[in-house]
Amino acid sequence: MDRLTQLQDAIDKMALLFVSSLDHLTKNAPLVPLHPNVPVVSNDHGIPVDQLQNSAQELALDISRQAKELEALIDNLPGISQTPEAQIHELEVLAQENADATLDYEAAVKEAKELLQEVTLALRRIAEDQSCRS
Amino acid sequence: MEDPNAQQQGAAFPAPPYYYQRYAQPNLTLLEKAKSDPTNPDLAVALDALPFPILALEPPPPIKRGICWMFGRPWPVQDSLATLAEQGIEQLYPKGEIDRVKELKKLNHSAIFNFLDLVHVLATSPGEFATKVEHIRVILINMHHILNEYRPHQARETLRLMMNDQLDRKRKETAALRRTCEDLRKKLAGLRALEQDRLAIPAGATASENNNTDNTNNSQDVEMVPAAPMVSTREAGAGADGTTALGGSALSTAADRNAEAMSRMMQLCDMIE
Image (cartoon, chains in turn purple, orange):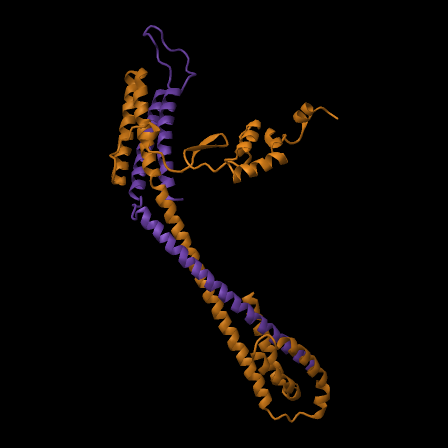
């Protein structure tokens, strides 16, 4: 896959990581008491605090790893070496060469076809020769 | 017969557009006259009588500038990447010539720091998240824009590589074809030399051979006639043939060589095809 698309996909992946990490932390947080006198009685919501801490740690690691990957990909970007005019000029030269090569190719094909005719006739002669002799 | 409305609702195909009725013969002749001689006064009177401009009968000219609508979405007629200013996004990297790699890395770092800020804001005063989210959005759009500016260059590079590829392939095929032709010609020449050898061997063959081979002579002559117009080298072969039949049967080894030559030539034929 080409590098530009990889880079753009990596950027999108990082944005996704941002969103999903915040999402995960807010959705799965356990309940906390609003007032010291009113304790929390149900444990049904979310996951326990230490697990949450662990997942927060993992998410932070993921994000920083993705940032590092992005940097590596950026480093691998090819530079823009030629101006558009130079490129277009090269393309025109190539197009001309292609047309010439096509002409050559067609001439060779014609030659080959004629030779094929000759050879077929020679074969026929030989075959008849053989059959008449045997 | 159902009434036309029901037909419209239940028909398999939609009705033609309403202006098909404008293409009546009198209108078409008026169009011809208007195109050839636009200043004629009674022409103007006739044209005014029509409920539509006469040039509407011609197909509309192609759109050259601006935006055209296709499948419900606007497409620019000149397809080019809209600059950030046109899209209404602030451009965070300097204008003009820039070092893409460096700018992209800077933007990458800013994105991470802004995310950190966002988390901080959410922890302290969650209501104020909007500005940070907006910042992150602008940064990401800038990054994508820098990359999109690479795309036309990449497209031209790809085209150049493909054309080079095609060129190479054509040249290789031409060379292969020529080589095969050369091989075939050498083999043909070899076989003809073979026949000349057979001629050189004294035609001590008997008259009986003559009788047996008269038939072959005829058949071969018939074949030689249509072959004669083909290539001039055939003439040499034809002359050799009439006499080969005489001297041939004495040499069984020649027959073997013939069979071998035949198989080789069939292989070469397959290659050409």
